[in-house]
Image: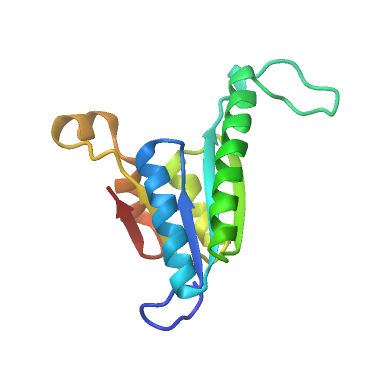
Length: 153
């Protein structure tokens, strides 16, 4: 993890999945990156199952119909974020990650590999039994992250 001045971040990761809470988190991340003159990385994790894939494309890549839709939707979200980041003079890197790992595990692994010093993500605010039954990506990231995590409701 990079050394930094307390309270100032140099590399911020925001995890987005297209939900309103994650898009709110992205807006907040842009503001924080602007304030700290930090690089912002927007990440979408596509959890894949090899059994859901169709035939190989001519370039040798496997793409299921669902993945094609996720790629298109992610590109649109990333384009919108890039416009907002540009208006705020924020350096933005976007990344669509296909992974067989859990979403939270992928976010944590990516944050470690990029030496991120803050993760920002939204939460749908599930509580009680629903949280126990469904699990919580945000909760797992908070628990296992190597760096501070900010949750935006």
